[in-house]
Length: 208
Image 1 (tube, helix red, strand yellow):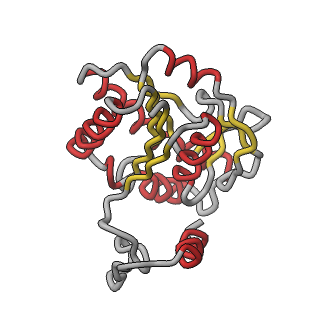
Image 2: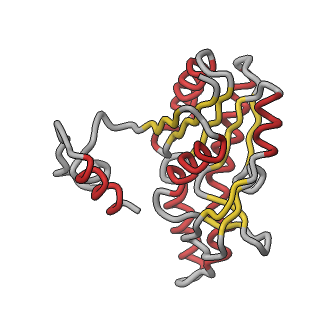
């Protein structure tokens, strides 16, 4: 493989122990692919905690300021993973959504990606770096930080696969299959033995 995109969600990178597991997975795929781009979410419940803290300050925080605040969670994860990969002997660099060239419209907290300028990522990949990109965020035409809403890190990963013409995009989850609902939120959720493409599309749409 020439280029792969990997995405790891919040529970997969929740603490330093889990970050080490993720780093080893990244390294194993780096041995198979020339170029590796990793998209990460904020660690654990960081985003929920930031929302709670903002709402303690204001019942209705400004959406622009919420985007500024919430984008920090992914930045922490990206920099920590990059630090870890470098220590393990695999050159890495972390990039924010805007450093990675992700441009969006100006709908704060629920922005849509309009274009991705890949020059910076390609330069880093040419240097042999593993590129770790913050999911869920970009920059609008006013140079303001935006976030992509629910499922935004998955959106980032898929969009980067298209923009980079990557061979594969792997989205890693900490559950052992597809469930009827989010098992972290719904205790009665059941693991499905099989599901049709149409049903899977419906489940995916309901989580956007």
